[in-house]
Length: 277
Image 1 (cartoon, rainbow, N blue to C red):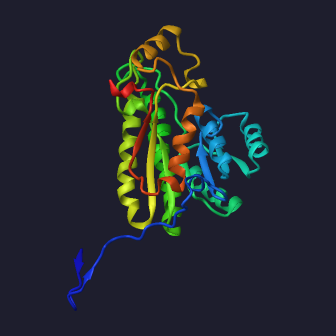
Image 2 (cartoon, rainbow, N blue to C red):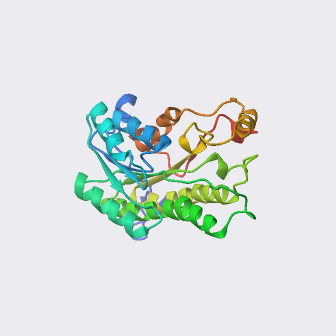
Image 3 (cartoon, one colour):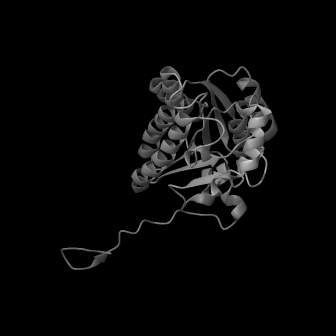
């Protein structure tokens, strides 16, 4: 409690609580909200898009190289009756990210949630990785995440509310084996701490920042990994399997919705227990 210096009365620094629904099911609704999902045409990103669209959100799918983005967006619109648009954006370019945010605002009239999900893996360890490959992974996985935070955060700050969700990784918590991927691990650890730092900075004007750290997930990125490597992954995962991307929808919906209005700076592991060892 603070004291008013003129008359000695006590003034509270307590912020007001947000307006909330009594129904938990209504708290999870996203009707009328606009969500950007980077890497939205990929395995995790697409399933998250479907989950949020089912809750009523309009979806801006960002992609870089996909040839299926328009088809996937049309499927979401058909299945859930929401607006869905696609945007070709290279998150390595701040100019493209900033333009993408402004294009979404022009098309949808609002922005409520940014999910910075785009990412690529490392193919070699720290000493064997080519410098240009290191720079490429860092530019997508860490710089791209920050660019999405910066461009959306400026919009959120002006309107006094907004919600940023990063896709980090259990690799930000543990050095995976047998694959060597120092750059990827370091970038994801950086994203986790970036989320915590921004959460503290944004709280004063009403913004929230969180991240999700998935474990091994059955997507195209892991599709070309050798059988023996996957068997070692499973042996080190207490649940002895990888995730179906649909198993991640719920945590993103929680963080995107009013069910999580007192959650900021959190990193939620969804990894089958891998990081518990």
